[in-house]
Amino acid sequence: METFFVRENFEKTRRAISALLREDPTQAQDITQEALVIAYERWDRVSRMDNPLAYVKMVAWRLALKWLRARKRAREVEAALPWPVGDGGAEAAGVIARVDLVRAFLCLSHAHQEVLALSMSGLEPQDIAPLLGIPARTVRTRLFRARKALAAHLEDPREGQS
Image 1 (cartoon, rainbow, N blue to C red):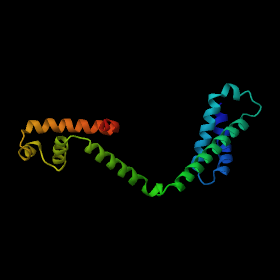
Image 2 (cartoon, one colour):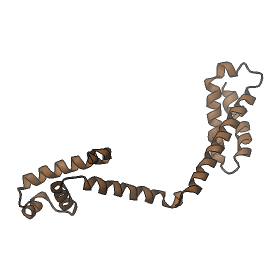
Image 3 (cartoon, helix red, strand yellow):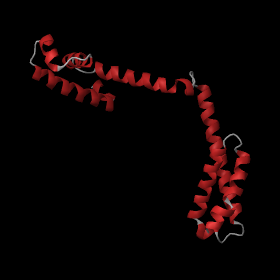
Image 4 (tube, helix red, strand yellow):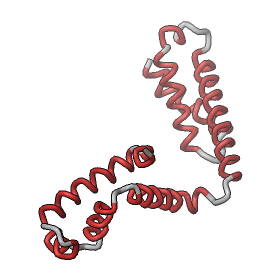
């Protein structure tokens, strides 16, 4: 069995798939491995076939065609987007995260916004207390509750809409 999978047929199957996937030899190797895993899982049936290698190549070919169709769809989606995914995708995700954070912050009570903003500016609770005219212990309590509420709004944005 090892002879079939490793020594004899891996390279034959990889070369056949590489012809289809000329642009991506690494993907051809991955698809070949996946096809051989499928054949291994069905070995009791595949081993009784007249030509097990033909079965493996057929499975690999179908997997390669499936991958090519998925890649084509992904390229069509990328082309339809108003910004390039490769260049600005990470930046867009960062902007979305910041917008979500601002929305969640605006859902907090005024008292929670106050202590959280002062804390985020680098002030300690004992420094915030005289500015707000409240005890430092109250500042710490409000900070704890503000952070908890902010986390809840970020996990489920609908909580701020009720």
